[in-house]
Amino acid sequence: MTKERLKSGFTTGTAAAAAVKGALYRLIRGVAPDRVSIPFLSEGGVEIDIYSCFAKGNETAVCSVIKDAGDDPDITHKAEIGARVTLLKSGNPDRQVVITGGSGVGTVTRPGLEVPVGRPAINPGPVKMIRQAVKETAGPDRYVHVEIFVPEGETLSEKTLNSRLGIVGGISILGTTGIVRPMSHDAYIATIESGVRVACAMDISPLIFSTGRRSERFARAVFPGLPETGFIQVGDFFRASLEIAGKEGAPVVIFAVFFGKAVKMARAVPHTHAAKSGQTLETLAGWSVELTGDAQFGKEIAQANTARHAFGLIMDRYPVIMELVGKKVRAAALDFTGPGTQVHCMILGYDGSVLFDSRKKGASNE
Image 1 (cartoon, one colour):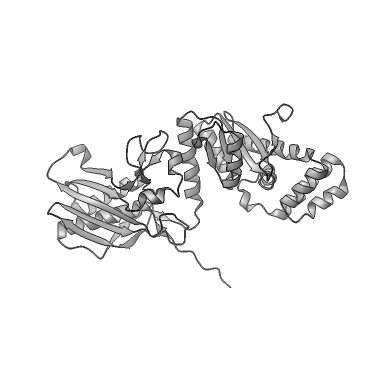
Image 2 (spheres, helix red, strand yellow):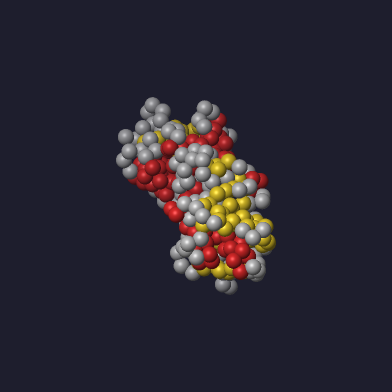
């Protein structure tokens, strides 16, 4: 049986460019197109159906399309993305195409993102695509004002990390190439990078990296005074998140994780989802025997059903193994980060208790 190939889609930036192109067709040619063609910034392109398109006088048209993320689990999938386009008689030769954000497009309020503070959250990739759409449709010498809007943008933004990044009032118009590839790691890594950049620009330290909502919730209880921006969910991207932290100059990073993820990290696995559970438990069993000399216990660990099962055995009989795992996590993390960033490991119990903290006296592996 062959695995069904997942369908690619297009970004909010591509959708915005299509809406702009549709509006310009309506103004210049006098009729609304059924669909428009938008080239991606990488290679290839896409035909996008026009959802709504109408003129408001002789100089302004409003057009929208429906975002299609393909088989990617995207918050903005099926969202309406629109553009209000006005042809101007004159303008600044250095800014022939003025792009603003309307209803449902967020505004940047914190430094560290690709867009300056005070500007609409329309990233450079989409801006380039919009300008390209104007040039293709209206020619290189027209003065045009473009306002991008997203009717449900403010509601959709509540399901994103925008508020944490300081983007208020709506969603971001995103895209580096224009295409959405299903289950793409690139989008997640870009989110991590944005979070780290904003936190560093705000001089927040330490940064608390967690792998998901629950570990973050427990970490917030440990660091009640830390701003929300200091907490960054990095998923399974152990190495990539640390490389970003090192590149952006984060002074201190603390990984707050549960035991199962910690063991995978201790093995220096770059992407913890890819680590096989059987190999992880075998490695843990070997470490346990080396530390305790108890071969029978090592066999029990190797035969455990899950890392959580192994966790229970360890806490009952040899909790010192927790410290060994934590130290190995920190050593692997330091290798991934490079010099300039302090990295620590905090292993959380499933009840939120802190079982190991490399910052504590006697826990250092240096």
